[in-house]
Length: 118
Image 1 (cartoon, one colour):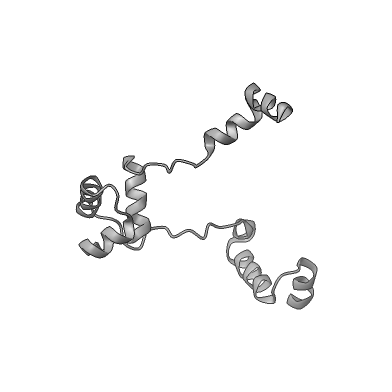
Image 2 (cartoon, rainbow, N blue to C red):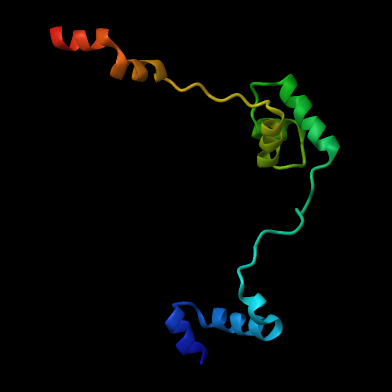
C-alpha cells in the first residue's frame, strides 16, 4: 500500500508511513502541517552578553561583528551580534553609490537637452 500511495502523491514511502502513524495516533489532527522550528533556542543570549556587544559597538562603530567577536572573545555568534545591533539601531545602512546620478538621468531636463545638442 505504501509504495502505490507514495507514487500517487509523489513522495517517499517513509513519508507515507509517517502520515499513517500520525493518522493512527491523532486522527485527522495528525495530518496537519507542523512547524519545524525549535521550541526553545539552544542557547539564549544573556543580558551580560547583550550589553557587552552593544557597548563594544558603541566604542568601536567601524568594526564588524567577526572582528569584535575575535578580538574580544565573545561567545555568541556573529549573526547574533548583528541581530542585537539591528535591534538597538546601531547599524548604519550603506550608502548606495551613484544613486543621485541614476535618479537624475531619467528626470533632468538639462540631461535631455545635452543629449539632443550633443
